[in-house]
Image 1 (cartoon, one colour):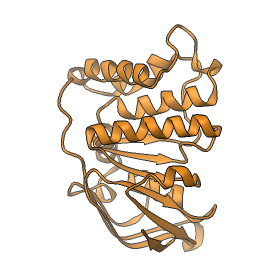
Image 2 (spheres, rainbow, N blue to C red):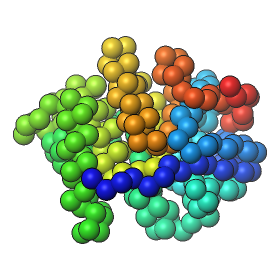
Image 3 (tube, one colour):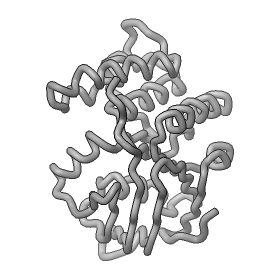
Image 4 (cartoon, rainbow, N blue to C red):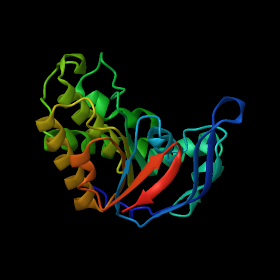
Length: 228
């Protein structure tokens, strides 16, 4: 497997995200994250946690400010360039999994290969298979529609890691899981992040997950209340 590039640090300045009629739903003056750090984002429902995750991924059109990963301002890139940056550097884990139910685990975990250059496809599929094995996802011809919530979330994690990203962004990754499965997923995710030195930002209500982060910050009404 090719050596993964150095983890990406984050420099955020004057980020503003607005909804209809100019209503601000997120406004952060500054946030810096050292490479290889695990950051937990907490706060009440509607505080802007998911919005922050999507903004850090460059997935919100019209946001203002600077969101620089390793010196590249993803907020300033055109949509196609932002998508290419994500495909090389950022792994995303969504609360609702966003899997293709008609496909099996391997096809879902390796889906990034379909949108990558020929030189990267083989490595992505290898990492996807290794990730599924490491996360103990059942092998075989079953489609993911028949999987439990915990199994589906593990497939989603393997998919997020398959292209060898330097940063992982996760939105409520344990929300659909019972406690044992949530703790197991947290173990798996943090083990991978620590072993490979990836940067990690997790938005969550899960106190046990948040307690294991290197740093935490709290959002209230779209603004930073404090950090630990």
